[in-house]
Length: 589
Image (cartoon, rainbow, N blue to C red):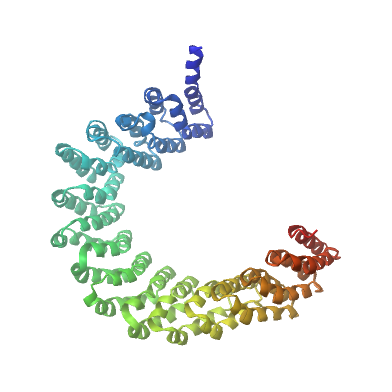
């Protein structure tokens, strides 16, 4: 019996070994994903002595299998016996951190970082730190790139001698011959700087930052920019000018657009890190240059930051800086040749009105908003419309209606149906911003006109728009303003418009409630059940099915059922089918 038991306990590992050796990748992948179950079945000791050595030996497989393994091992601490045995997981993860496929290496590093926190300080020095050194001095660049991500997790918890060794290894990797390693080191420089003591940030990190920021490869230089922002947050104000700013100034004028793009993208973070004085003296001219950059991508990234940059300017000189330095550049960008630049600007330009106040907005910003509302690129127009509320707060509804609304009405009647469609989607938002009286006065007729548009997509969107408007303004408003106009279309000579009435009733019945539906809408639906066009009649059946749940049971039995029964014996096959379906769905059979 004992023999049978031991065979039983060997079974999971036997199955795993078979599946891991199977030719089918999917089977191998499935067995890796079940690793935790197998480890539980084996118990902690056999997981350590049998499973992990076996896994360490089999790391020659498809990338997706290795990726799954690297992920699983990060959650294995308890399965090998808890934190005191966590170092057993290092050998397989070390091998995975050296494979060729980047995704697998990154996942192995992620798992190593995760389990590093579970090592005691002693285990960290005895087991983890030697692994980092081995990776850092490996022959292949793959292991050296992986090492870069591990320095910062073990540095804070080791002795000062080991700390010195770690700093030395990091220095070596920053000047590695392989660009991929230097890139990895640059990407982790900011993170490593955060765990270092301030004296070493000044003595070690600054020189590394300067070297990486003038690397021959632009992919290394642009990562150094990001590190520079992190380093700037760590240094006292008086050291910034001498230690970090010369390098960042040089990056803002780098010959590679990718590096300049990175500076533009990180500009707000940089501004917060360096403080108001450096911002005024250094960053304002740099920002102007980025807004005028010859590459559209850089201009777009800088345009995206305009509002944030202006908000973070020192209050005492904010308005002067914006009016004299930033606004002239913004005016040029409004008519930029690249639509991505204009679109990026349109998404933030409205926010300037709250910073500049009413008079400046009316005088300087409104002409720009108008120009963008009339831009040929739909995205630019939409970005303006979707941010109207913040301008409304500053200049008030009357001023807004005189200046911007004519442009919106023009777009609503645009010859291109996609432009009309885009405006419809923003109508509920506009309605909420402008209020019900203003909406009725200026925009209601537009919304009704869309219901009889010659493009189906517009009619469909207009129906959904009405529903959203009723949700905003309430059923009473719908009864007085919308319902009479919708029901009037039931007598339209064009059958497509008559069908739109039905679609509107479907949408409105739910938001208007039982009373309005029964009293005003239902009689019109019944009347349309005698329509000459079969398409209208079967849509009556579909409408009754849709609004049935809103009606009370008495109305369903006495009024709806006879109409559906009549339609169920219609000559047209489709009308019959939809009428029978409605009868069964509403349980009227």
